[in-house]
Length: 173
View 1 (cartoon, helix red, strand yellow):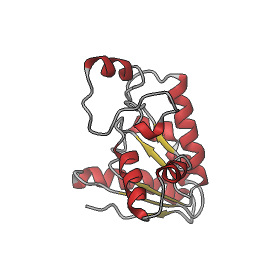
View 2 (spheres, helix red, strand yellow; view 1 turned 90 degrees about the vertical axis):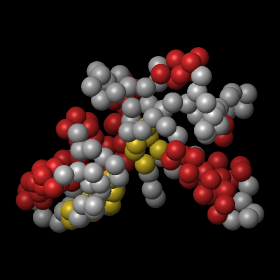
View 3 (cartoon, rainbow, N blue to C red; view 1 turned 180 degrees about the vertical axis):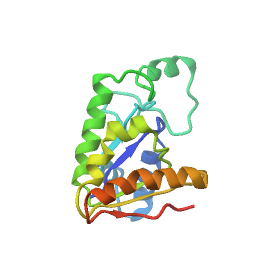
View 4 (spheres, rainbow, N blue to C red; view 1 turned 180 degrees about the horizontal axis):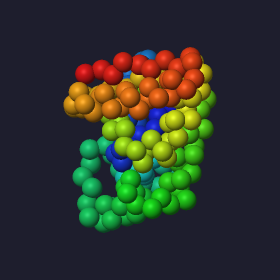
């Protein structure tokens, strides 16, 4: 079982997964792909621009991936977005709670493009997650300086020292 939490507003992940599943087997139907996609939790922690056409109910409109976002649509979808420094809404808090509940069930956590911002670490309660025994936690550090990588390792090493059985992954360059 896999789930995704993203800090991105765009729909690139959904678009990629949908396309990959459509090409997975010749006999797979678009309806079956949507059924599979609906079983994969994807949480846009700070909101999402707008849905793709296959993500909407009948009678509603989605926007094709890559289609231009005009001012009217941007204004409409801007209401669904939040940033890390804003006071979180109930909806944003519920997304972080849902993410935490998925993370605490995980045996393995992989983070890609995560900036290790203190606010996001706190909101996701990563300290609580890492204290879980036998969790594999790996992350990338592309674009981070050696000092930043060292600081991140030190931060998470504190959790490792508190409790045995936590496997901290190597940060990739």
